[in-house]
Length: 170
Ligand SMILES: Cc1cc2nc3c(=O)[nH]c(=O)nc-3n(C[C@H](O)[C@H](O)[C@H](O)COP(=O)(O)O)c2cc1C
Image (cartoon, rainbow, N blue to C red; front, side, top):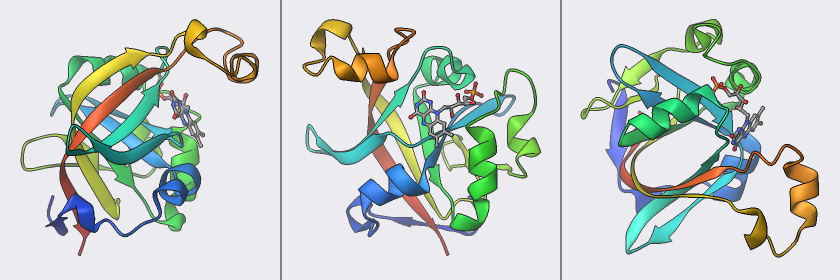
């Protein structure tokens, strides 16, 4: 992670609703041999069990899911507006079919503990999985969400992730 500087997660100054919901993030997981990333615009950043945490939700059919299931750690990378096309690409193409990261014009950088992230990011959160749970139909108090977002009943798996390290581009 050359050119990145470690900061305290409590010093992240972005509005997280805009950061995730409008700017979007790239969830990246894997190892030195193979990595994959996907765009995500749902999730959160907050506090659980006194840890700074992020929440990500990933549908089981995503190729990225295979990596987030296999690995203990993953990263969330946030890129500037100039990478909007790359983020759209990573949200509409699957790494199952191609080298998506390269084809999006992006490249991988590894954290000090060897977790893959996106080199072009302005902010990277290195995270460790603490808790996973699949969303369940019977737990939706507003059932219209199921009609709108889950016609295939492909409920997300929710990951609560401890933010181990936050890096910003110097
Ligand atoms: C703006 C945007 C936000 C997205 N957010 C999510 C999300 O939060 N969770 C999810 O499972 N898929 C989300 N997707 C869909 C995945 O990014 C998309 O299916 C991607 O092609 C999966 O790639 P993969 O098969 O290489 O993992 C989003 C797509 C876009 C364009």
